[in-house]
Image 1: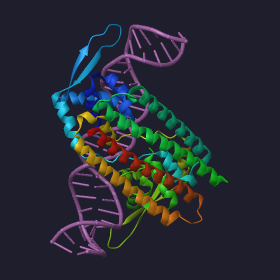
Image 2: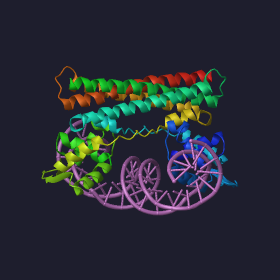
Image 3: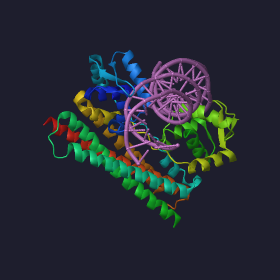
Image 4: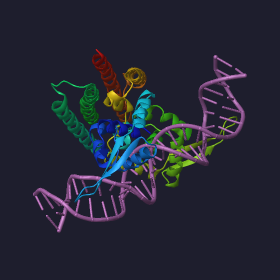
Length: 179
Length: 179
DNA sequence: ATGTCCATGTAATCCGTTACATGATTAT
DNA sequence: ATAATCATGTAACGGATTACATGGACAT
């Protein structure tokens, strides 16, 4: 369970509905830990059972009611305890690298296109990060909370730049093989 | 199923036992797609059911018999077909970045130690990659197969160097917050 | 008309991890 | 003696993905 803690971390900022959380896991914290809405709803049910969040329904007219989840004292303690446990190595799983590794057995033309697609994805992600940095962190006095998020964001920015350069190089190396 | 294809890719090089494959997924191809021996054995059973590999037992005296798996024609076709399917984005899941993101709620002293541990892991991995490059790829005439593996390895080397620099910067940024 | 957003979930399946299990050989 | 290596797997559990399901509001 680390999705649980990631949810608790989000709820430390402010109480949120499952829907809000799902969107958060598709952006911001989702840049470092991705989760689908199904996972979020299931995990919320577990956190409630364990008393780490409290949930109450808020009536809305015209649209479905929201169920807003708040982190409890026990929840905050759980986050602190988790923060002391050693982290796992992030699991590496990249089909693109496997395809490069298996170059002789793949369709190289398609592979080149897939490298271009990946390149675009990283360029977009980088643009998103830079927009966020500009809008929320540049030239401001930051709280500790914000400084932490800025460090994570800085890691993300570096990473995307590196991926872009790396895949550009991979494409060049592929072309050299053809020649 | 992409572990299946990764196994087939390995078997394209040469027939292997489950044990051999498990070791391969703990090194070489495992640098891009990690899998435990349990996963490998289960997946091999499925590949056999689908006729993508053929398995035969080889008697050995003094130690357990080996079961050697060979990729079939259908298996090779499956690899080619897979190579044309769009790749998924690699799943991002890194507790360390989540902890940085949640800086205010974590034990910062422990976090610093965990950053150092991660740094060491990346340094070791980089050393491993450089050793492999030196030993198998440097100053040689390479086949297309080897050139593909060299591209993947080059990606890996770049990546590790970048991670090292990034986490070093993160540690500095953390120290700046304390000051 | 068509699609997207809001908002919630269930069900089935698949993938990954941890633990359990066996047993001889070889190195320290 | 102790541990590592060779070599195979099963069982249980938990995490992740895909598909299914509902239904009003609002924009094009």
